[in-house]
Image (tube, rainbow, N blue to C red; front, top):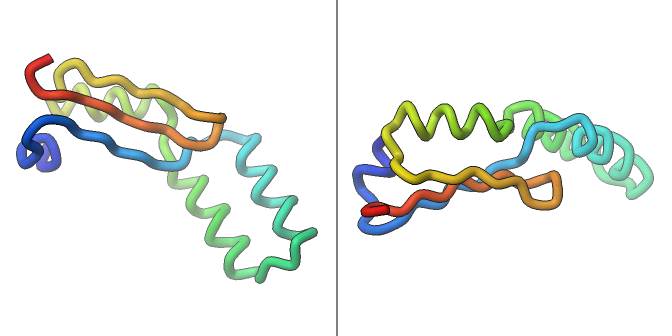
Length: 86
């Protein structure tokens, strides 16, 4: 609600999309790349804390964001878009 209140024209919020495929990829790939344990764990926590489309749309509706859209890009990123006056 605060982001919607202070924006002049449009709002775009981006986060990781919580899904098993992304989680598996971030669990497996960094192990072969020699990434530190801390960085691997941080990546997995980020996915666990991400949103799903329906959850983000529900939050947007509860916040009163009129005409908001939620889209998933490449199965990994989720984007909420809303424009005032639409």
